[in-house]
Image (cartoon, rainbow, N blue to C red; front, side):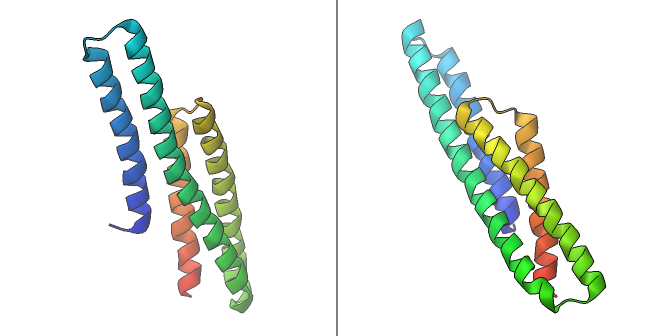
Length: 134
């Protein structure tokens, strides 16, 4: 499993743990007040785990953009054009990921947006890595 797939699995696992935690809390025989406290704690922990994984993906994408921008000088004109397109797509994915990170931090994230941002960031990383191998 590659590094990018590992990040997807880690974020998925964090979200899965949160769902399992929620199911466990809702089926536990506790008072409403205790259940609400457990839900708050679980939500905060899940958000922190997701935030950490998303931040790592964001930082990796930023690092790869810089590396490709530095190495593009040695490419042919056609390859430079392709690399610039890959860099632009990566920056867009990075910005999208930053928006999702902000949504996770504020508690307003949507799973679909999270999945799309992770997919776009992973694809952008893969494309950037092609240019680093040239």
